[in-house]
Length: 439
Image 1 (tube, rainbow, N blue to C red):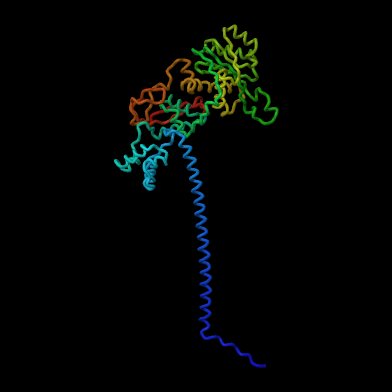
Image 2 (image 1 turned 120 degrees about the vertical axis):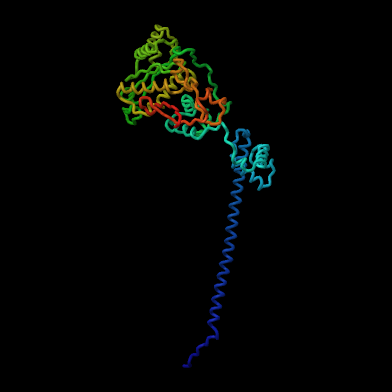
C-alpha cells in the first residue's frame, strides 16, 4: 500500500487561528452592540411614550380640577402658604410668565401676584417666608386642649366642645373648633330639593309652664341584643327597664324620672307625675305626650282635668311635637346607658340615672338654650359662659371681640391653661370640665 502523506501545516498557522478567533469575537461583540443599541432605542421610545401618556393624563386631570376650582369664588379657595407663594414666583420666573399669566395659571387675582412681587422687591424673600404672626392666632396648647377634650369624650361635637370650653372660661368659635378637629361641614343640599318644614313649634314663656312626658326602654345586660329567643322578646325586667321622664320645655331641665319593671299602666304614670309635681312644687299648664295607651285614655284625661292641666298629644316624626323629650332620651342612651353595664337592681338603676340627671341639669351645656345648662335657665342664675374669660393670645387687644357670648378678659392676655376634668360620682362618661392657670 502506498504510504499516506501528511499535509503540512502552513507556516505561521497559530497566528492565523488566533486572528480568526479575534475576528469571530469582534463580530459577535459588534452584533451584541448593534442589538443592544436597538433595544436601548426601543426602551427609550417606550419610556417616552409612557411619559407622553402620563403627561396627557395629568393635563386632563389639571383641566378638570381647574374647571372645578374656577367655579368657586376666590374667597372660598384655599390660601397659599408663604413657602408655596415663593415657589409660585419661582415657577413664574422659570416660565417667563407675566403676572396675568401666572395669576390665571394658579387661579389667583392679578393684584395678589403683584403684591407678592412688590413685597419681594421691597423687603426681600424673607417678606414672604417669615411673616409676622397675627394677633388673633391661638397658641398651640389651645389646639391640644380641644383635641384632649375630644379624645376624652368622643361623643361631643364641635358645638358642644365650644360650649363646654366657654363655660370653663375659654371662648372659641364653632368653626375654629371644627378646623382644629379637621372636620368638614356637610355639603348643603339644593334649596329647591329641601322638604318644607312646618314652622309651628311648642313654645313656653316660663319654667314649669309646659312639660314633656314620655316612656322608653333601657336594655339590661341580658336585654334585647341577645340573639336567641325568648330572651330577646320580653320587654320587661330582667331584660329591660321601663323609664318614664318629665322634661321642662322652657329650660330643658329634667323635672323627674321613674323606673318600672314592666310596661307601666296609666295609673302608674299618674302617680309618677304627682310625685314630680310635688318635687317641683308647681303644676304645669300643659303636658305634651305621644298617643301611647298610658296617655290616650279617659283615665289620664280625667287626671289632667282634676289638676287644671291641658293635655296635648303629638305624633312621632312630626316636627316640633315630641322632639324635645325624644332628643333627651336619645342623649341619655348615647351618652350614658350604652356605655355602662345597666344594673339589674332597682336601687342601683335609680342611682345611675340620678347621676346622669344631675350631670345633665347642672354641667351639660344645651345647644337649644344657647350653651347654658338647664339648671341655670330654670333657676335664673348667671350662666357660667358669661363670666370673664381666659385669653391665651398674648398680643390680642383687650377691647377685641371673642366667640359668643361676649365677655371681658380675666387677667392679662397670653395666659397659659391646663385642662382639668372631674367626674360626677366617679362616672367616666359624666365629665365636669374646668380650666386652670398652668404653673
